[in-house]
Image 1 (cartoon, rainbow, N blue to C red):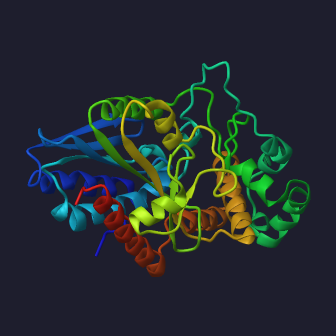
Image 2 (image 1 turned 45 degrees about the horizontal axis):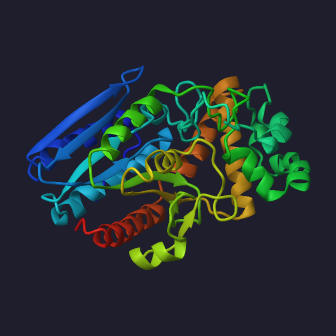
Image 3 (image 1 turned 90 degrees about the vertical axis):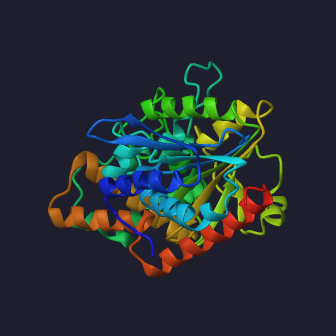
Length: 366
């Protein structure tokens, strides 16, 4: 039913086509665009009702390639949930591709190799702590300067290379090395930058306006890649005052977890955490991440993810020995974030409907 396009320009056209539909629900619909290089842009549709004191905000594509699933999520919301939405009471803001360059080039990072979900920090703060000791211990693994060859794609050979790190760091240490974010190697994976990126500044300004203009903001940020196979996990900020169990009871949805070292993984510069730290006590809101699992969350699955991320990054910066190797890496990378798989697509739509039904009804948006 929905268009699972893997083309950035086509997806943007789908998003902009929503404007006509939205105008039948809202008296004021305004589109905006924040341009990036190569004709890429962060596109927004702001739908306002003058009597509305609540807002639903949906953001997608913070990790470029994950924006393709975000586009499908927006299609599903507009076509299935908007007809039952309380448009007279709730305004709506849709954001297509926080990282449009990454979406166009089918990468997680932006044009500066920065992971935007590790970039929501105050880099001028004297108290900022950007250390990632686990990454430093694995730096050699992540900094191979040679073009990727056929043998580099062998999963078992890669596991052999990882064994010393598994022994010394354990699975949690390896996960921390990768996902916590690192700020010392600009050409490596999960680089958080040394200053705010342009898209980060744009989103911070947008959040400042939104969280100061409404009595209550409900915010969904759409991601793919982590979590159980073919299952969406709602990942709350560590600063959410309610427990995961309380949220599960409220929404009638499971699983729900928190982005901490024990339950999910620790993140420096996380966008949702930034919102909580910046606006808790000033505004009433619930901001969360929908994380759609694909490969799975077992140890082998995590190692496969690490290997794929490392190979994609190395291929981008160092090249590949032939086009066949590049094509295989591209295929592995897509399978990790937006698989062309009917079972995953069905699970994606099923869990999206379940979560939207539970949360929108709980907060009185439907």
